[in-house]
Length: 413
Image (tube, rainbow, N blue to C red; front, side, top):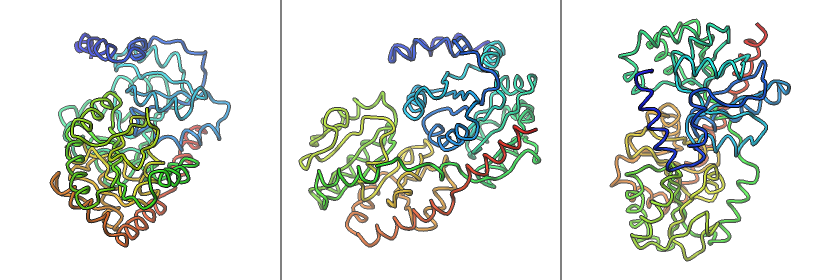
């Protein structure tokens, strides 16, 4: 870690050129920040947007059950940071997680003085874990998941990671498969318990359904609408080509396009315009009109009303080998889901939705258009898929309650 520090500094400087707020906060990456004299804080680490969203119901439960405990949330990415501020404002203390250097980690822990550390999903940093053990800070990995791809990537470091995992008090795994992979990585089987996925407990934002219905009235309630959410580079072109196929049969169809990363918003908008589509954006137009063919959602944390306004949702990161993103947001709103072949980040959730008939998988980019058109034309099938998706979502809820029971037990020891 010391040897790669110069490269980390160069990366921080490069990111800071694109984002001035990011540049101003880079000292936090080395444990330098002003902390308001915490003692006995509850610390939650959620690397980026997806993890912050997954942790939202748990964080709200912590605020409810431990109102006098300072709550610290760390992230790694600027988008994760923005989501924390959007959800919780000043009610929590946010700081970037320091790099896994002993002195940086030491400064960080000395300033926040946590009573309990809660790591969301998969973040294994040996120096951080060793430091928590030396200071007697209980550490839990909650909503723990480990893909087959990550397991293979960790293989060269398995001995080191085994030592790090032995510093963990408890691993609350999403599934039996995740639990088995943590055991293969070296975690003590006695540390692991399967509790389900917290993402099933995410709240549907108040007013999301009503806002979606209002948008449909604005652009035409009978208009076919599909959404491509959390798309990555290499996917937008495939989505736009699919929309061209849809428009040939359904000329009034509307595509809601939500790129995953804010730094790509303008690039995607320009690409849509260059292909000749009538385009509107969230930042300028707020909602599309009946004349628009594509609406670019260039805003973070605002997808749920648009899911509610959609007939079908395609969830990105799955046509390219990113591993897919959260399919539960449309499922919670009874919206049928399409995904590509690469869903290893959410393999069990996606497989469950597909098995129960709430989602379907397209084999590749050339099948997205035909599959989407077929669904948009088949109202009865859409209704069946939407009902099945919502039933899976409701059936799997309850993980946060189980995690809070584990947290309570840990804090009472």
